[in-house]
Amino acid sequence: MQKKILILIMLLAVTMFGVAGCGLLEKLTAIKDDFNDANGVNLEEKEKDTEMSELVVETPTLDDSVKTEEIGEIKKVLLYFSTPDGKNLVPVEKEISKVEGLGRQTVENLLEGPSLEEGLVSALPLGTNLLDINIKDDKLCIVDFSRDLIAGLSDGDGKETLAVYSIVNTLCQFDSVDRVEIRVEGKKINTLAGQIDLTEAVMANPSIVRK
Image (cartoon, rainbow, N blue to C red; front, side):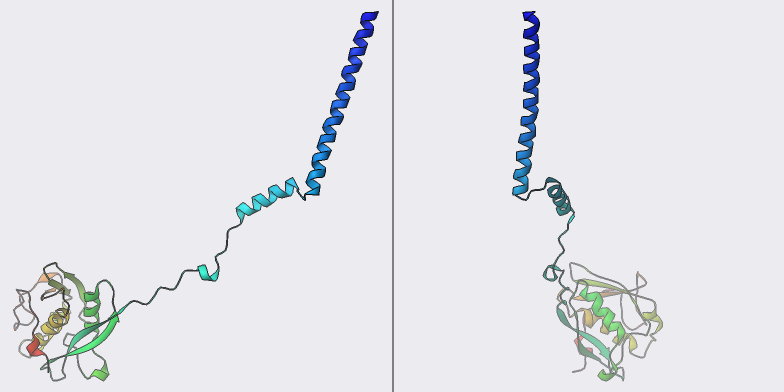
């Protein structure tokens, strides 16, 4: 009988301890919630704010935008055009953008011809196109034109001489060039119209330039 009473007392004690423990847990939870409320902390809102901050991408201001590319340096070059009577070449100064491939750009401007105000004419046949240009380390410039360069020239009228030195004098103004080899459609040629030997590279001819 005493044994049964002892067991009953133990069960009652365990039950009371369990109830007290549950009450203690609830009390601790309530204290934590009160602390968070007092400090303005909301765990769910805090987690949402963290997620949103990870998604936000900083928008660049006007000061951070890419700057407009600066205009390239201007280079003054000489283009050699013919006098209307076809007797001499005249250098005309022109400003072009200083870029890689300055020699190519210079020849392209030469092919465009002079302006009407300059009172000169192009020494190169109309329709001539630049196909390629290559400046070697030994200062040899190889320049390749379309077949129109030959088709527009005739023997004996002096146009060939002006055409050749219009090209050569224009290119030899650069320190990197001291002679020019003229080709047509990628091939070496003997002459354009029978007057000037083009089997070898040609050097500038200042005597043909009008003083």
